Length: 354
Ligand SMILES: Nc1ncnc2c1ncn2[C@@H]1O[C@H](COP(=O)(O)OP(=O)(O)O)[C@@H](O)[C@H]1O
Ligand SMILES: [Mg+2]
Image (tube, rainbow, N blue to C red; front, side, top):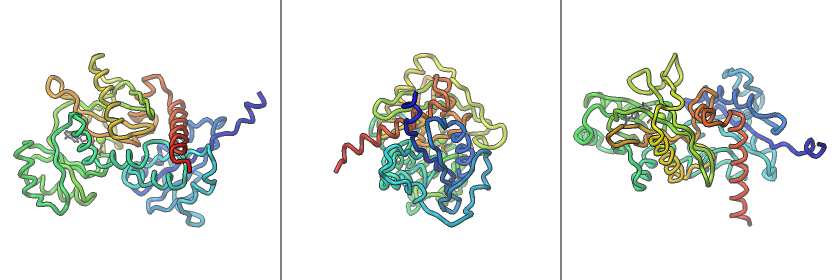
């Protein structure tokens, strides 16, 4: 009993907020994660990143009070996470940051430099997944079925590219920034002129933009968890309330319907789970990711749309809900993610021991 009490707790830093458009979502998520982390096991602290990129100690979030995340007190920096020393073998950062400058490998690189363990994919896996164009090219090379797409750079002859896309894909087409999330900058367009306008808007977010055929199919999502031996959850289904699963659907109003589990046959479930694990491995994900598909029943079957390495993580988000339905509670999920982060960190340290 005494030794049990003396067992040192793992120190956990919840990193949240951030500069991306998904700042508010991240704050809400952090509040839930803090409540679920077992104080018997973890010594938890929080570091917030303001909208302008300042790193601040934050009391937050018992409630989801986003406004409390402002830089009162001395301005600080990323050192906040590291001041507790790289030697701390049992320090784990949970980056609850979505989108660019959080989910894309930048924060992960900072944590690598500081020799700190962190939840989720590493630098490469994060960067590859964040760039939809690169992810798609790697999936193509590995024979993973997807919707037709082409990649444009803001310096390309975009009008002729649009003509080519319309000729190859027909109308409507989808236009989206390569590096974004939450449906920001995603447009479904029905005419050439709309396409040209949407392209200009997408280029406001990113130098690289995807033009895609519009798929008519169900939207199926699978949660994957693990490092070397990842496992897949039961699949879920999104039923958008709008023309597609847009920002409003994701965060405002009644929004889309989430069906957990998705109504699929046992054979379909197995197929999409195996596919999700293959994609996860192919794109070098670690810890966790949600793999999103379109399902064209009777035609091309499951088409991979994208992978998200820091998926929505409130208790009502798809990723935790899928694990809940697969027998892993929210708190257990956090325990496992922390253990996976420590295991990967230890393994990498051994490989590069100097
Ligand atoms: N090629 C496409 N065909 C049909 N629907 C699409 C296509 N691309 C995106 N969508 C719709 O737009 C939503 C958001 O696009 P997505 O590529 O998932 O971007 P994000 O990273 O912002 O979630 C999807 O969930 C889907 O409803
Ligand atoms: Mg998506």
